[in-house]
Amino acid sequence: MKNILLVSMLLVLNSFVWAQERSDVLTKQRSLQKLWDFKGSKAGEMFDVKHYELDLIVNPAVYGISGTVTTTFEMKSAGSTVTFDLLSNMIVDSIKFDNQLVSFTHLANEISITLPVTLNANDLSSVAISYHGEPQISGFGAFEQTTHSGSPVIWTLSEPYGAYTWWPCKQTLIDKADSVDIKVNTLVGNKVASNGILISTENTEMGIAYHWKHKHPIATYLIAIAVTNYQELLTEVPVEGQSPIQIVDYFYPENSSAWIANQQNVVNAMTAFNNLFITYPYADEKYGHAQFGWGGGMEHQTMSFMYNNSEMLVVHELAHQWFGDYITCGSWADIWINEGFATYCEGLYLEYTYGASSFKTWRTTEISDVTSQLYGSVYCVDTTNVSSIFNGRLSYAKGGQVLHMLRRQIGDEAFFQGMINYLNDPALANGFAKTQDYKAHMEAAADTTLTEFFNDWIYGQGYPKYQITWQGDEETAWVRINQTQSHASVSFFEMKIPVKFSNATRDTIVWFHNTQNAELLNANIGFRATQAAFDPNKEITTKNSTIAQGQLVTINENLSSFISVYPNPTSNGTIHVVSEKEIKAIDVFAAVGNKVLSISRPELKSELKLSSGIYVVNVELINGSSETVKVVVR
Image 1: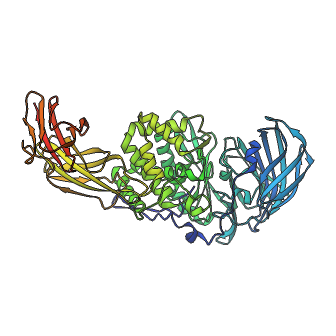
Image 2: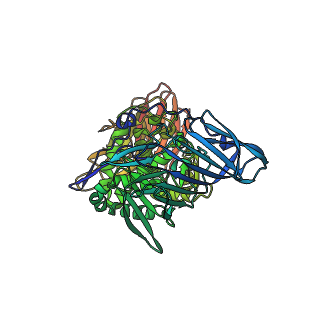
Image 3: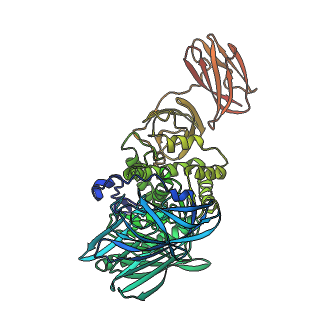
């Protein structure tokens, strides 16, 4: 969904400061009633929605709604009963099938309709449900009536479970309507904002009717209306090789100056995402904004509802058109593939538009948010609570930082190709996806397994803390990496971590692949380092990590009174390891850090055959002690 509260950005001395509060939705917005206990739509078992036509009557000065919703559907199996979702306080006036009145019951938030005939599997049919009532508050206030500068306004915001509070539908995350027509009859002086393109406006007995049509698949919760005395602004975003994308903004007249002044924000953001991913999925229709009074934004398909059009709020909601609308999370437990993605797109936009420094500043703020508490998984385990689903620290900030760390683990080429492949997957595009669907695409793009990474960072809780000791010589840098975890759900975060080595004239960043605790790794950096810094660019989600210089290896032949490694250096490729005490293991690491040889329970005297290069030989004794030596093979 949304950037939970208004996101503002101040550009001061080329650095960005944000007031981003996404976490405490309930106290920031209103004291909400407990979320309706919505267990899932029975309609999902019966039919696939092909088309919705909402023909509604709305007076923004009066809290309530009436109208007729006609649903065209295809039966999944034979039957003479179909069920729709509608909150029980709403009044169903009549239901027609094939233009004939039919009987129904409306109990426990479900409308059960008895058809006069038995429909077969794959039969295409429709029912028209006429209804009226005053929707009850649900989630973020799925149907809201208030005023702005004395003018009345009504808007809807159905995510996650609110659609059935104001219109009869199939509320689900397994089925998208192929298309939708939305007709709203209201008073003269008002405009209606909705999905798709505006087909017509016409005078009516009540005043004026707006007809919007959206020809793309759409999830139920993304269908929306907003009605008030809007002012309208039209803009275009050029797209190389095709027609420009039409931008249609509806905003309160009293905010016209600020809105018009900020309109370049959507042009910049649309251009960035068209270049980073695929072209805006609904380019044949439009993108737009409709101002509303909720303190943030909601990514209704092709027309986001917005508190204002400030830069980062525009960026976040626009990103959802790809991640959340075009591909929608297949369960609320997987909400991070909506919200974490849109959050990371904020960072990608800053990198694309303003450069690495602004991107780093943004990451620093996000990491601070994530690590403000020691626990919590990106995967949402409590989907009965709005604040759990839309937890700003986890679903948003941590989800976004997980994507950044994944990018650093597999590299830019694989990361962005995986993102594009994900968007282009015909099984997911215009449909639903879960975490495992995304994981599969990133694994294919990177040609590696990411199970460990996803288990640690998506399903596990907390973050790692590093205690690193480093040493340098004429051309090699050594590190011993110790890690603790902020939460016991993850035994070890296996990943690449960056260390910057430098002296007065040179510096380099080495990414060490840390696979176990107390691991000794090395890299040939080509100079003697005098300083080292852990994660200088804020690439890793961690807190209170440290790095300090210390003695890790020695070139002496005799390491102790009971272990010898010789000759060192050697010119014939043979190294001898001799110990007076029983050896548990000998591990040999190349200068680039990878393990090249491992011997378990060797003899007290072992012979190692090595090609030319610099190595680290680690001898671990049965008694738990160990000795490490750097060896040179010429």
